[in-house]
Amino acid sequence: MSGDPGQEPVLRIQRLPSAEGLSLPAPATEAAAGLDVVAAVEEPLELAPGTRAAVPTGLRVALPQDTELQVRPRSGLAFRDGVTVLNGPGTIDADYRGEVKVLLVNLGDATVRIERGERIAQLVLAPVLRPRCVEVDVLDETTRGEGGFGSTGRR
Image (tube, rainbow, N blue to C red; front, side):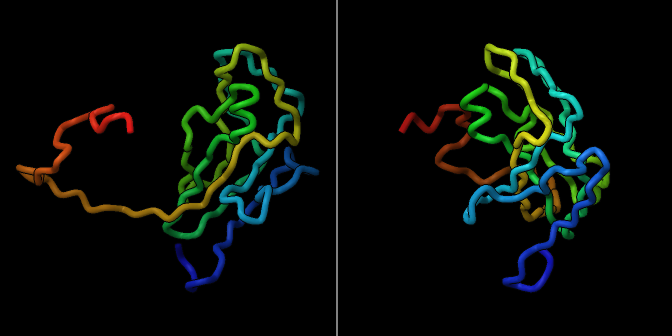
């Protein structure tokens, strides 16, 4: 990530009026990898089984060069209610300046109520590598070869 080695990256955040009074993304513990982000819904959102919604956070971000912000599920919400991030991990690109929204899906069997200020996802800042793609006629051989899903065994 850009910046001096050992220097923490800076995530610049703009709070939109819909997020007034809500907390900014923050880690739940000192060693947490993700920043918990909350729902900036005006009224509670009812998420029925099998449905999805783009839940607003009321935040816009400016990322350091050569980074992405990954939107990941919160394990408690997933385990307790069956609600997860539909495209998890989602990606916020460094050049995106719109409102960050979280695509939640209810995979559980009961309607889940998302309240204003409820923690709905984690944001993880990650470096981005942009490879140069080169077409070749033949790839090198490996032990695995063309073995696909489940081909390496269960253990």
